[in-house]
Length: 88
Picture 1 (cartoon, rainbow, N blue to C red):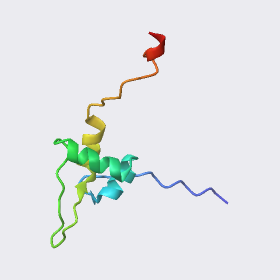
Picture 2: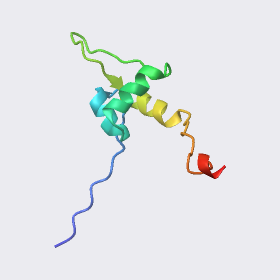
Picture 3: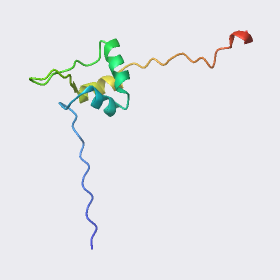
Picture 4: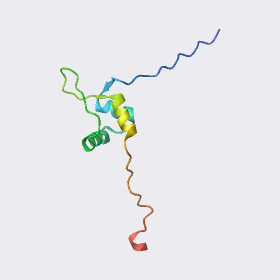
């Protein structure tokens, strides 16, 4: 019996796909709480949209992913490299 050909992997177009904050967090691999905090702190975070007749906020997945991947990372200060107060 011949092997069935593997289905072609199609690239998913995220343009225009609206997701809520929980779905966006899952897509980006972060927590909803952290994403909400980032949204409030950073004015560059993409604007939310509302579907007609709805009060829920949604974000364009492609725009949100572009923002998230292009933002400047500011890692915290490493404390393990500083001498301790009793060592000085």
